[in-house]
Length: 124
Image (cartoon, rainbow, N blue to C red; front, top):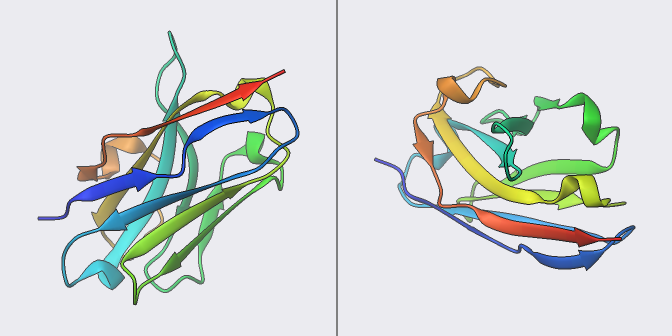
């Protein structure tokens, strides 16, 4: 069982930056692939970024366009999402997800554990 707790969301102006963190419980964090998803009001949850257990493999959604970076610190059981050049279209609840896998999934249905989410609001 893995428990995930996101933090770091908030209100930021367009062009600004935020760093989201996701702290995971459990002693086998390093064997989990981690992903970030987001859901805006009235829209379906969508993939943002994912990272493999070795930190060497990553996947990003096309809309990220080099603005976001996912990383992890296995010693701290934490995964991060650095978000730069934010725009109002990035406003959403951001969720952290985990799955015990050697792959780097982009489909939300492939993840087994989810956090409660953290709100990111970008003002114009």
